[in-house]
Image (cartoon, rainbow, N blue to C red):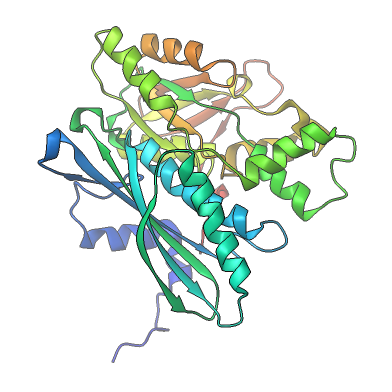
Length: 340
């Protein structure tokens, strides 16, 4: 019988080290992105599958998240993974682990939040399971479909590609801080405060970007090669993971990264940039594609999207500042959130 507590332990490997070992059990051409793509014969579409597990006290709590918001966030996380693959959603299954003393009203409110988010994207719950658990956990598997030639992969970035980010970064982390520390942000307006909290509690997966992206690439007679992933684990994490998967480096310009201007009223500049780069849970897209269609995409998405840098030779991701206020630095995965 194996000893579950023998060395090395999970905390010794860390999240990325553990994932690397577990991925050896999977086909190399299926794992490694935000979701798995399984080729299918129907109408030339491939099936896209992704799963996220959320645990009470780790991903949500009564202190910061109502059951409705917990349900919404769980769905948004999965649909964001589909968007990162270029896929449109088909449905989800829900696995819920709960203690026996959880109020039925709490469970119903959780599912109401799930349903509210799904309705925004014409998607439904198609199955699931409920079991007894010592801690509340929510596991959602989302199913989507994508044309094989429109699949967004982390491995497709090429030297010279522009790096496009959608939306703003740091808002979700700032919203969490406001929920955890109500005394913060007293100088913010009600609208400013609500915007940051809503970014944390009700994120919106960027499925809306996909038809705009494909229209631009088709109109430009461009190849449909796009590398990308979502920024759920942080903007720095997304760029680093893309570069590692594609075997390239990158240079990012700090002054080009869109961020909420009110963040400077909440924390020091150093703290703000930590939220922007490593805070996570903004659920925006980070895409790498040729410069001309990248600029066209930003123009159509509006001021909250931007080209923040370019893919470069090598294997390092440099954050530079043309204004000279900050020194150049090499980004690293070690500063982002890790489960172990």
